[in-house]
Amino acid sequence: MADQLTDDQLADLFAGLRADTVAAVLPPGADAARHTVRRRRQARAAVTGGLAVAAVAGVVGVAVAGTPAAPPAEPTGPLPTADRSALRDLAESVLPPDARSAAAWSFSLGDETSNTAGELPAGSYRMVVACAGDGGTDVLVRWTPRGEDNLFDPERAVVVATGETACAAAPSPATLRFVTPRDGEVMVSVEAVDGAAGRAGFAYRIVPAR
Amino acid sequence: MALTTDLHPPPETTRAVPDFDELYAAHYADLTVQLFAYFGDRQEAQDVVQEAFCRALARWSSVSRYDDPVAWVRRVAWNLAVSRWRRARTALGFLRRQRVAEPQVDGPSPERVALVRALATLPGVQRRAMVLHYLADLTVAEIAQREGVAEGTVKSWLHRGRAALAVQLRPTGTEVSRG
Image 1 (cartoon, rainbow over the protein chains, first blue to last red):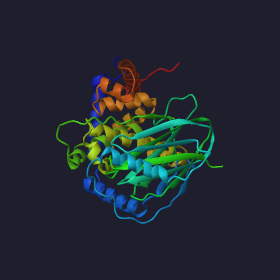
Image 2 (cartoon, each protein chain N blue to C red):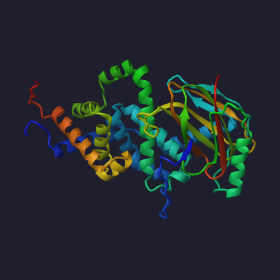
Image 3 (tube, rainbow over the protein chains, first blue to last red):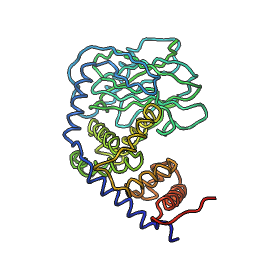
Image 4 (cartoon, rainbow over the protein chains, first blue to last red):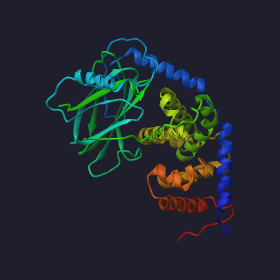
């Protein structure tokens, strides 16, 4: 049809958009990325055992605990399985016991993101976490209403909390708070950063806030 | 609760590990274009792509061994943009609309602006498919794998997206009658 664009014309439009935009973009640079990562590592080391939490959608609280520690170790390869299991057990051991626990997990951190999921009734929750070993973690908590299988879909699942933890040889627990507005499913994603993969264990427990 | 595995496929390979600086130099701008085309805000696109590269660098020993590290950076940038957009949609919606209306001295030409605006009218899945196909140069099969859908579904998204854009971006001087 004469009054509509052909596919070739459409492709040309996209190519033009790419060319124009690339020409106008000024990359901050790889060195800027390196500087950001270095600064974050230093900040993370300053609150070992603590949890820096970013509020999302106004439903997240913050609790920071911990003591100063040495900078995180550089990655030196995965530890033997027995050592990794010991770090996982160590992380779990520092979580305070709570009979009202709605969910609890512990695991060794690897290259892949560790995802754990389960159903939670609507309510306010405290998520107590601990990480034993090297490096740190990025923690992401997603929620989706019951019956909707959207936990992996960033455009549908609601991120109710995010945080960063620093791992330590003598970990101390930190707390992240979140709210589930209705009965639904929650997924906790924990990603190893700064050399934690293969060299750290992580544990968390979710309990009703009140 | 059931333990599941990862979003990010990290199969290790024996090929050479890519250099972070080279990957950044080769892909920062292109990824920014893709995010700009999808979300309509160039500065926002630059910010989230830079943040995604920072996250890649923080875990470079793992990301560099993925089959496609760029795909990982793209997904992280996309997820960051979605999260920001969801927050901004409610808190800053008015300001964002104002920003779009501002004159852009060094911005894209009106033709490019029209394309970005037309893209913004498409449903998310169609818009994403169009961006990944025309700007990220992904094949239908690659988009289907990324989205976790059948190839026929992607073809349908692309077909509908093309049709909608073709009408909106029809050559100047033509009219479309409305019932």
